[in-house]
Image (cartoon, rainbow, N blue to C red):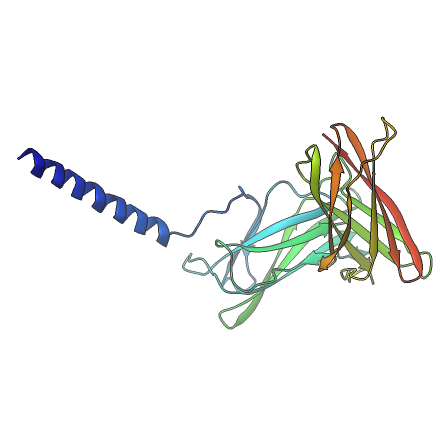
Length: 268
């Protein structure tokens, strides 16, 4: 009798475990990072609800964005072609900003990842909006959402003007976000201002990295200058030999020679 009781309990446990496991696998997986909703609204035809998420409040510089779509029944839309179009409206003019629309038409864990590089903060100078254009279920629709952009405590966007033709470039800092002593992955993204409404990725530059610790008067060895990996993103490595304030000096060159010189601060 005692053996039968143990067999019954074991069977109940196994059934519960397998049922729970199956239910978990059918659910939409949760994102690895907590997202913060920054805007939402119905498209012009009201066929779709659009929600825009970020990992933190929007700031001047590079902002990863995550788009969630819902149909009229409230069901998540997992297949769509999405285009992100930021716009700054000022008193006397309008301008766009660099944007990376989702590269895949298939959602990742329920979200379509993209990014926008806001070039200035919201305020007295003007206001930002984000138009999300969606092509899904055989229809093209869009919604324009107001968004607020703050200036970060440490600048994460720099610009320079090319001496040869006067072209303006924007350089956005991406990482390291959590710097540590030792070798860190480093990444920046570079965009050229072709017009007030067009900011294509700059893919043909050469970057040279030179870290400096200004309070100590030294740099560091074993750095790898960022090289282009796609969509205007340049990746390399920076070696921090100690904690404190560092300047990450970048010299940017094109085929005509030196194009720009700038630095980003990292303090940890």
